[in-house]
Image 1 (tube, rainbow, N blue to C red):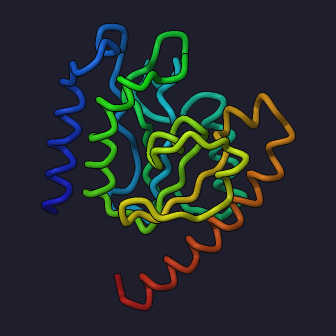
Image 2 (image 1 turned 180 degrees about the vertical axis):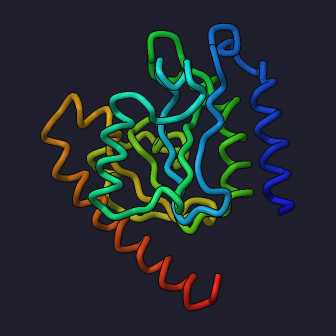
Length: 195
């Protein structure tokens, strides 16, 4: 219960944040949504227009595709939390700049610490590069497990990229089969422990 209270405090801090200029143009802060005891933490880039209007991540067209992928991989929404590197929408959905990432990243690290997921999946290059502190291409990063600051991370493509490029669907599905298999192992381990 203590973690849930700390999460509420963090959510309030994010809602009041003025650390970068994005607070001037946002409609709603998008803290994230899902289980407070997730197996998987999915991390995207930043809220889009629909997310900014509703205050919920992944509710636009890319969000609908994301939900389909989760369904196909048999990953229950009860076992995930979804958030972004940035909690406010950049104007015209532009890529987050380094200052915005630097100001917002501590909030994500706080979420990771409090949610304590079994593993993290980064969706897209911006999220992957920000969390893993790298400038490598998505092609070289995706589908490979890595550990960063004690966190198990698997990068894959963002659902929005799949809407623009059909050729990314097959490698993304390959990644989601790895995600599904690891998710199932985590489920088995938690049921063995009686959690």
